[in-house]
Length: 258
Image (cartoon, rainbow, N blue to C red; front, side):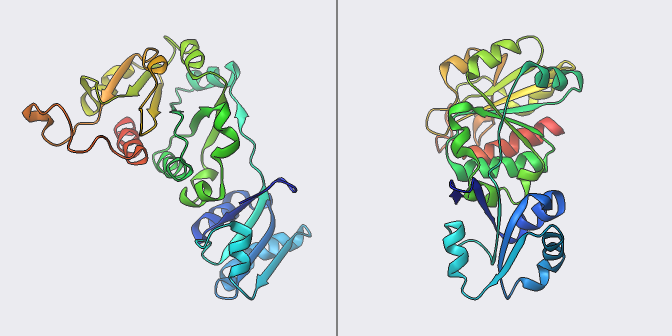
């Protein structure tokens, strides 16, 4: 849950807060926990006390529910300053190309749970750079997406762009722009490494309802499809319309890092 008055975000979930403690404990302004998990956060309480921060053991877990807006707090809630999403510029993309860094572009995913799961997969497979549309920046990082990312937010950098299509146009010839599409002819496993040609990759994922937009599709160097059951026997469509976008991201990121 976001506290707009204090510009804070509630981060909850045991693994999520532990990763925050390990990597960015200085971001925690206030910490609240139940007696059950208190022994597991003694070290963090000392760090917070050293900088005159606030930590408090609550008697009723419902207090944590009020703070986080969810029953899935797992006995601990950390209040942090609302994360700021960096607007992407040419200096940043130039550094990606110079260092051969890949990036993941999300074409209006929208769902906070899916976004959190994608961040978790990105962190697991070492994808450091995630780009989202600027009009979704306000709602992308939520208590829910932070918790579902299971600490992944501490290992990725999230950027925003005003226009996805213009951003992709600017990268033409500099990064290999690969989009996922159910109508694609190229199969993911056989194409993704062949297409790289020594250049970093921009992977593009679309939302579950409509996939990537037509404008974005036209700015891809290649469209690929994740092979489905029966595809080798000539079946033209999978039994269900598509994978969940978070599941699809895991498969694609795995193929990229192989």
